[in-house]
Length: 95
Image (cartoon, rainbow, N blue to C red; front, side, top):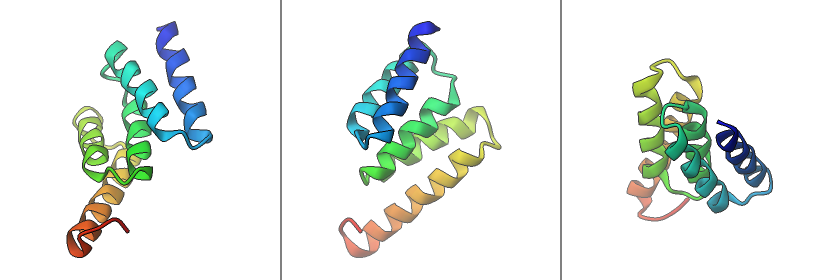
């Protein structure tokens, strides 16, 4: 559990510095240690959104909502992912 907390905190620090790819790696490592911890999924979804990886963000949010069906961050970030996917579909490019 100590390694999980350390990795999560390192991921959070990466997000603060705008290092989203590195944060994704840290959160993914956390998931290997505890796949039921929803915050690492919503945090990773945020990183995916920042990198315009809307499908990946949506998948992380879907996973959280299967575990916690009232997780507000997951609903919000999934909505942002759907919006990004819609814009991409309409314009055939990144916003």
